[in-house]
Length: 442
Image (tube, rainbow, N blue to C red; front, side):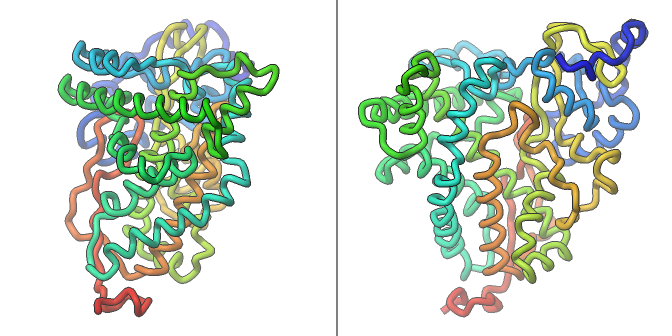
């Protein structure tokens, strides 16, 4: 394991023990005011109690940049095994839905540890984000962005989540996975919001409905994988099948692993990119000087994406399980404990990002963010997400530079610990002032 995590003397751990935390009493990640503005809470936490225990979650909460980085880097001490285990135990009705679908909740890269994670990661990465695949999908992303803007550009108002950012990332993932056009309508209905299922405390009724959607998508993904097993084409799953069939890789995957990988890619490539896009557009339109600068110089889009990922990430926390006793941030945490590493807080750590609450698309070290994790579990889909977001910003700033947020709207967020993006983002503009003549009302 990393020696840097054990560099505090044992007597310090004995002295620190389990702190009595006043922050734990106010830490409720499932309700406002936290949902509306978690960053104010974490500013206080970093200064007063950077590591504290939450009895309501039964998790140790870690908020400073260096400590979060250590958790990601030391995979011997901090296991990813619980990363996608539902926070709330499944109710019997939800279990029944998964059983009906013959769903097997097996491992995937996100909750695997070395050495098996290392063995599989290269193949899954190459199948997903090779330069060839990114080059192939780039024009389709721009085409989809244009088609969706066409639907509302002459109207003068839109919900940029429901009418733009919600569907396009799903359609892009379908293209990469090789979902045929005639199946896309069917597949889209399974692209439900799953953050609440895994990282929230849904009611039994909500949990059962979400489980039913997961079961339906599992059934579709299994059909899709089996077709590729019979005749693997040139797409994401086809590439994984060919890697599996390479001599020496017989133990690399199995059918259930490929089905689970397809499901996880849909979520990772869909909901997270949707949320990141919505967060970014909200931040840009609330900081009008930055939006105007982007509209004047589209070359700033790449930097804008990076600062959005730092300032208002769609993933603000990851979970780990402690394998052996450890001291982190001056606090002793025992083996078997569960840890919530708050990446959103780390991205606003004053020791790394000067004036962290300032949104600046020219910030020179924004790339140090943890929006995609860090270390062995760095998100494989990061290049695709950045590409999509960059194209979205380029197209919207080109065609709707004068759009603005609808005043006095309320931003609502899914009540969960880890994934964050507004359910709606209402914007308006004068369509008669659209800079492209063909976009003006006829």
